Image (cartoon, rainbow, N blue to C red; front, side):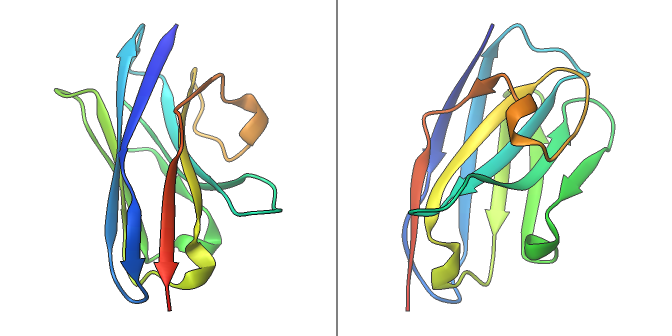
Length: 123
């Protein structure tokens, strides 16, 4: 089992930046992958970025490349999502998630989910 607790988020003006955090606990392995997803009102949950606890493997959605950076702190078992140049279209509930082995963009393959955090970008 893996428990995920998110922090960060809130209200930010267009063009601003925000960092989300996700602290993991439980049975975590270096081969596990951590992902960030978001869900806007009336929309399906979509992939944002993912990283593995071990190694350098990362993956980003095309829509966020260059504006989002996923990183990790293995000592703190925490994964971060740094977002820059935010715009109102980025308003959504952001979720972190964990899965075994592979860094993928497929929402349904992640077994563990954080509680979600609201990000609102005002124009």
